[in-house]
Length: 201
Image 1 (cartoon, one colour):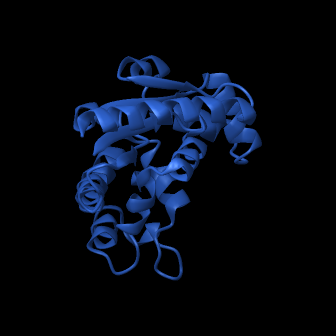
Image 2 (cartoon, rainbow, N blue to C red; image 1 turned 90 degrees about the vertical axis):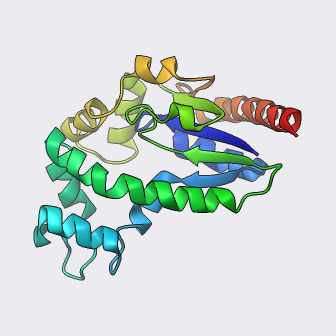
């Protein structure tokens, strides 16, 4: 089994890279999706978030109001650290559970947005970074996701710098260009990952 950490700044196109890798045969463990699962209604995770942030972070039907919580934590590093201390251990435990179900010849892709920020590179056999310029990221967030420019900039500022991400990268996928330029690069990375997996067998 080859354990790969996949990361990239918000708006860099990591989701598209994940989708392509899965289509080639990778096993995907998506930290963002797991982070949503561990705070669903009725979970200990949601109870802990409400205990820390109050009932105001819930919607009328008792689910987590993610935009409301986001507006609180992205403006306050201490509150963000509080949230991370609740969610990250739960995500780590569930990720380990999913990884243990993968086969010995599998390429397991851990899609981890905050891999760089949380110093997690050493957990993986190698790290793949999806890279795009800050200008491209901002354009995608505003144009494709409909974010206000100020919110997009705040989200980007809360993440690691581009240089920090590139420093921990074993392989880099340049996603500054159009979508059709992405697929050949991802295919090349996949070929490298499967080669490395075979070498370990």
